[in-house]
Length: 134
Image (cartoon, rainbow, N blue to C red):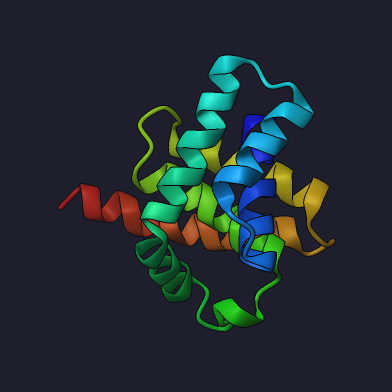
């Protein structure tokens, strides 16, 4: 649920320009998240926002046929959450981040979202793994 709350906050902030700090407080209260889950949601939101340019550049590099501004808002933010967890997160193994993103795509995205998200993140993982091995 923590990732889903983070996704909802990022979606709201991206789609409406609402203040993410107010949105996260509201969403945490609505979903009655435990302290650890609330902290994890905050961590993801702040990390995605702090690394937004870098994350978006990674998305653009691995989904060149889909300009960010034309990508569905939910798809874009699912990718942002997973890429943040892959490149910066130390709590979540990359394969788990990808699996969680695909599952969120099934719940929140369109019929094509899970396949799209899996394809982009698989490409990101290949690049990330080869960069780590250099």
